Length: 112
Length: 116
Image (cartoon, rainbow over all chains, first blue to last red; front, side, top):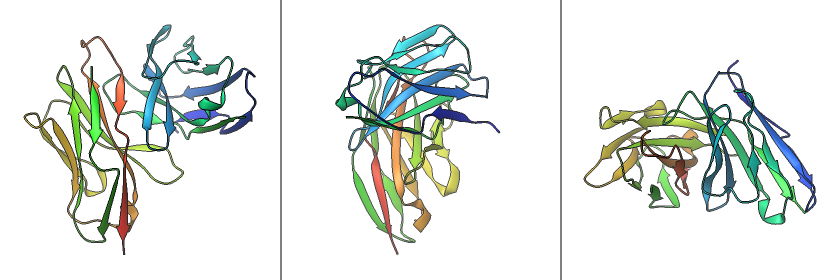
């Protein structure tokens, strides 16, 4: 089944404790992206990647890192999480852009 | 630089009546435009997309949208609302490749309520 998977789905952590949210797609898509969703703000793009080893900043990259060493994986790294990074995070992929984005199920992150 | 404005944060309609969700965009180049739907506690699903072909775009579940360059609008419509249409809808803009950016910009969303 074609899908985008994210892990974990739910995470509660404390300020400053490094964490990684994984994202994987099995559709051989070139474009992958991370978004955060906050009430009243819609989705905001954090980082995107056009292909392996090619990444670029979105609207809200501060406090986040990404890497794209393999085509299928695009992990989101929070080196030192802070409470303002509490949010719902979505990973998405598409064959290329602009094109249909296929979204993962979301990761709800709480930073205490 | 690109941006998108969804003119209503909340729209309420009666079942069986028309739906209109409004979206205006700003783009330096010829944009691609999308509408996505998010049902409660679910991920996002594509409703329809415009990528410089026909200006009237038909999507899933009876939705359609018309690209109007002169008005910089991409409003989403449906002739008759169904209870299952209750969800949040997002308008999305992306400049075409060659604009120097492959960024996608989402609107803040319109929550659609359908009254029985």
